[in-house]
Length: 353
Image 1: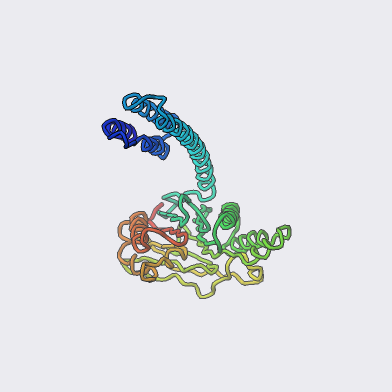
Image 2: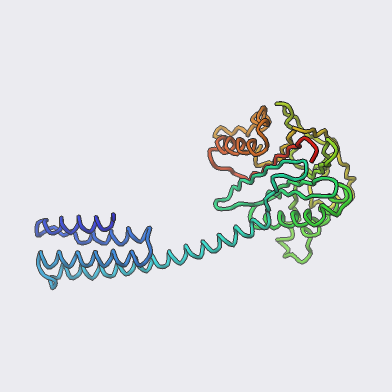
């Protein structure tokens, strides 16, 4: 209605204006405005209405063969045709972008599958906050897998950004899902993940420059094994930020004494992988996160105080905890994150299961 109202106003004012005043050129604004939000058919219709209005002005004020009005009509017809063509191109581009977005969303859902809200004795919530606009995943990752005796969970962060980071995340997630229920113990699982990541990062077939860049890549990760019938969790931390343990309103740090190097470093193969055990009783919540959470800054450059913000927030369960943290983290960072952020909250429920 705005372009049509613009045509009507310009037409009436042009007819009532003195002979020396010509407002016809303003009519081209109507189809141009329409092309910014509507398709080619609507743009062409508004352009035709503008040409008709200019014709009415020419007939009332002088005649169609008046040189001034003739040139105004020619320019208006050409400009209307041009913006209609641009509207057609814009519509086609939007359809292509929509199709690509649908494919990307499908691929992202395959790579980063949602973790079930309930696995055995565990109640789990997860969230991914992507720094890239329109993206749902990047270089951060998490997954859970059920075993005969418990649940295994991984959270990780790929060094770097972009499509390569997504590819490395997909590689690790695929390896974890394939081996989590097959490997008998946690060190064997982590060794398998290290071998998979290292073999890909050290691909000799990669171009020289790309191979050098890939040689500097690695993935920090924390791999947990939570038994069903034991109030504990076992963890191997490969250079990842230590999880938090929320118990009775208090916040503790699950910091291992013997951390392993990040995945993708070849010397990892010769390292001794030692899982460490922490008490994990009914009602406890383990909070896993990536460095995008604790490295988020406010306008003064202050890092996000995660441990301080979760204190006393565990009473309503994992979902309420992550909902609170997401809102608080985005508020702290001014609504926009500089790096991807992922969080997984795991609560042990009272038995039997």
